[in-house]
Amino acid sequence: MATAKIMDGKKLAAQLRENFKQRIANLQQNQGLIPGLAVILVGENPASQVYVKNKVLACESVGIHSEKITFDANISEEVLLNKIKELNADPKIHGILVQLPLPPQINENKILAAISINKDVDGFHAENVGLLAQGKPQFISCTPFGVMKMLAAENINVQGLHAVVVGRSNIVGKPMAMLLLNAGATVTVCHSKTQNLHFYTQHADIVIAAVGKANFITADMIKENAVVVDVGINRLENGKLCGDVDFAECSKKAAYISPVPGGVGPMTITMLLENTIISAENSVSK
Ligand code: GUN
Image (tube, rainbow, N blue to C red):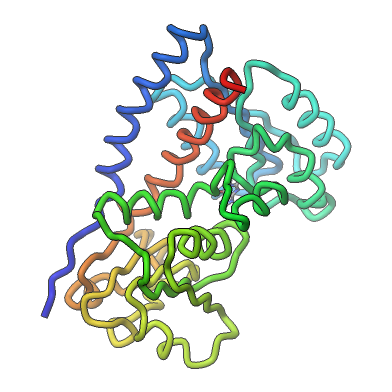
C-alpha cells in the first residue's frame, strides 16, 4: 500500500513568489515599471471579501501595486463597464480582475468581455478562453495554471496519462481539461450528471477534483498509485477547511496527493501574481 507524497502548494507558492520579487525588481530597474493589479468587488459576499483581501495582501507581499475598487451590490452595469474602460486605459494597471459572482442585475459575460484581453489576468475573456482551446494561451486561469505548476514541480509528465477532471466550471474544470489536453493527456471531464462516476475515476492516472463537496472522492474511487489533486475548498460545520477528497483514506492509496489547506489554494493567488507580472512584461516587449 502506497503512502502518497504530499504536493505542497504552500511551499511551491513561497518559492515562486521569491522568484517574482526578482522579476519585479528587473522590471523596475530596466523599465521603470511596477506591475499593477486592479481588483473589483461588487457587493458584500463574505467569501468574495476574503478572496479579494487575500489577493491585495499577496500583491503587497511581492511588490505589485494593487487597487481595490468596491461597489455597492445595487450598482448598474453601466457604472461597472465605465470603470473597466477607465482601467483598460490606465498605464499603471496591467491586470484587471472582477471578483465573481456578480449580482443578478449585472451580465457577467458582458463584464468579462469588456476587460482588455491584454489585462485579463483571470483568463476569463472569451478570446483568452479561445486561445487556450487552440493551444496558444495568453493568460491561463489561475487555479488550473497552479495545478499544472504543481504537477510539473513533481516532475509528473502528463503526456499519455488518463486525466479525469471532476467538475465542468468555466473557472476550473473546463480550462483544466484544456491544459491537460494541450499537455498530451487523455482527458475525461465528469460532472454532477455523470453516471457511474467511479468507473471513470477508477481508471484515472490523475484525478482533479473540482466539485465543491466535502470528502466526495473516496479511496474506493481511485486507482492504486494515482495522482490526486484536490481543488475543493469546503468549510465544515466545525469551521475547519476541507477539500473534495477524503484525504485520510486516499493518501494511503495514491502516489501523490494535494492537501487542503496548503495545496492548490496558495497556488491560485500565486498564479494571479504571475499573470500580472507577465502582463507587465508583455506591455514593454510588445
Ligand atoms: N470567484 C471564484 N474564483 C474566482 C477567480 O478565480 N476569479 C474571480 N475573478 N472570481 C472568482
